[in-house]
Length: 152
Image (cartoon, rainbow, N blue to C red; front, side, top):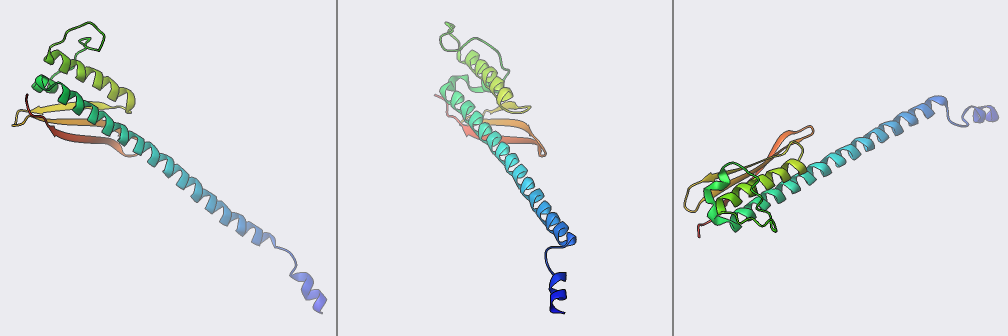
């Protein structure tokens, strides 16, 4: 009698094997989901870092060309004011060229990227620099900095 009971309980049944496969499958789906979320978070972090760097770049351009002042709130133009271009630009032309160059960088580095600079004639003058881009699953995201640059 003992031998017969021992034979009935040897090995795994088909049901136990199927249950273990379901448990492992659910775990693998969870790992794949975490991996996808990690990739998405890494992409978002990269875009946010680029937005911070682009806004800081424009802030530095404004600080270097303080005489450009309110022209940074105006229209962008390609005035060929690049170093080594042989063109002697006025501060207003340099401001328009900075906006043109910076806008091209924003459009190139950010998905559907748009850069905007707003000027407020306060004391000292205030500039609001915004970088906006489209993030997958999140929509439009804007990074904004406000700087005050005293006149010379």
